[in-house]
Length: 309
Image (cartoon, rainbow, N blue to C red; front, side, top):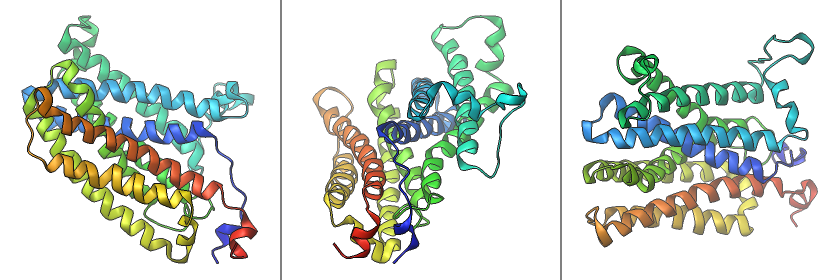
């Protein structure tokens, strides 16, 4: 019996589940936008602009959700500054919570700069001071850092669970990789749904769908490794959460979207529906992955499992 069964649950609220989900897809969208900004085609610019907008608003919403989860939300700034020694910073490199708070802040900052820079492509910002953010070395550096910080945020939530001494979370080394792969797939799915509104062409959407298929395959493999690595801990899944993991995450959230992506489809009119439906299912699966992972562990009562009841 793992000693994680004899630890107290942190009793995180729904705000944390939503934060993990939104942060993951925002990080995945930022990474894809950065890759396309550096290596994409001119026709991919609408996807790049959409990706950084999703990243920025996702960072804002993630910060809000994380703040609301605190017992006293108005003291969130204590995670960033030393209240007794203002304006001294509060950074604890050994603390996952402190590291994550600063990571989210940095991600939001660079996502905001990248978003402002890309607005110039649509005529939204014409101020000379924003020229550096629109083109050149500085603009490329900003988008690269936003993408790398997006990868960090997408995988960080899984790593945070891994260092929390609770069943499932601390019993597998694959949780960070699983959330990272899920962030990539949900980020791509979000762009598939939103990028057409900003003029993304058929070719860009087809490449997004191909990337999403690859991300889903990776996620499926890591999910299998994650479950296999739990060993005897898998008895925890003999519950409603296990049903949701198999049916909702693996079935509806991975296998079914893969089947829809593999169907030949044009990206116009009614023929685009399978791809859009696949993207919606990916988002559902990404949310259910975080829901089942958190609540399956949160719901364990120490002695009930140990006694075999």
